[in-house]
Amino acid sequence: MNEKELLYLLILQKAKGIGPINAKKLITHLGSAEAIFKEKKNLIEKINGIGTNIIKDLFNSEKLKNAEKEYDYILSNNIKYHSFLDTNYPEKLKHCIDSPILLFYDGTIHFKKQPIISIVGTRKMTSYGRSFIEKLIDEIKDYNPIIVSGFAYGVDITAHKTAFENRLQTIAVMANGLEKMYPKTHKKYAHKVLENGGFYTEHWHDEEPLREYFLKRNRIIAGLSEATIIIESASRGGSLVTASIANSYDRDVFAVPGRTTDSYSQGCNTLIRTNRAALLNSAQDLVYLLNWDQKKTKKKQIQRQLFVDLKGDEKTIYEYLLKNGKTLLDQISLACKIPIYKISGILVNLELQGLVRPLPGKLFEVI
Image (cartoon, rainbow, N blue to C red; front, top):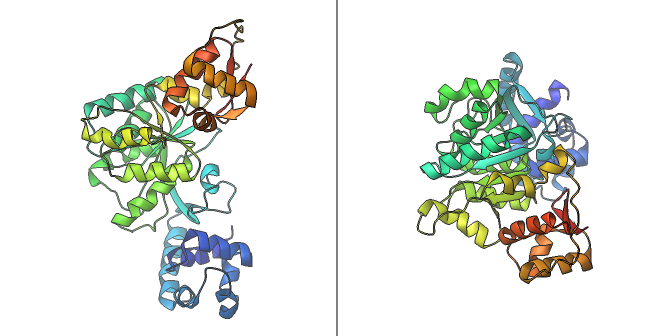
């Protein structure tokens, strides 16, 4: 991307009413961000979703001045950035319709076909949540995953710290500019994040964290990852928004269950009960449902047992797969009317009996 294109992307990024979806639509329609500002205004207005008010703000001279200041700052301070059209823009995020048109970053972030997971949850984490995160990351470290979170109090910072303590790459997604640190008490961890990954943000260098920015940040956290894990959450909270966004992107969502009387397990329990998240009891559940073992090494051939007497849900699932062939986990759950959190254990048992095998993409079939 040429440097001049960056200036026009900055203007697009801040224009009211545009947003990443309309910005991408305009760029796709006219060929580049620069071409938008060379086109006749009356022709741009005719593009679906673009109107007079948007055009007025887009060509506002004050917006141009602000964009030029940021443009100069980026070039003079060697700020690193990705355009959504760049080949090195994070691949999974690129597939999200509302991903940022510009993403600024700092650190040593690199993607080498590693699994990427997000770990999010309450800022008022319990000792149960902390120990679960530490045990989970310790048990999956051999798969070399990248750990993504939001650098906030509680679950987020615990996920980052545990990642770099296990020498894993970690990415902190910020709701503010790279020149700001929020919360300020986490500044002491910044150098570790930079050494073992880095920071991502869609905000200009000196932007303060606003309330609405945190919700926007959540889509980046969900979009970067193949799966999002909710450790602890009250009945309402930002982590539930992240789970909802991940579901909308058709990404895997996991939730750690808790006692019905625990306020910071209410959100997780609801996600599991309403089939918006798979139940996560251990690292084994994650590895199995994401097929990491198949990606890492060829599994040992399991001898199929003949004349196995199946009963109950095992029989229902086996007969369904026998009749329908390769089927997605979610579809098995719907067709057999069995919650996903129960199906996981049943499929493991069927696999150990040599009757069923997992395939990439959460597919299963009869052997």
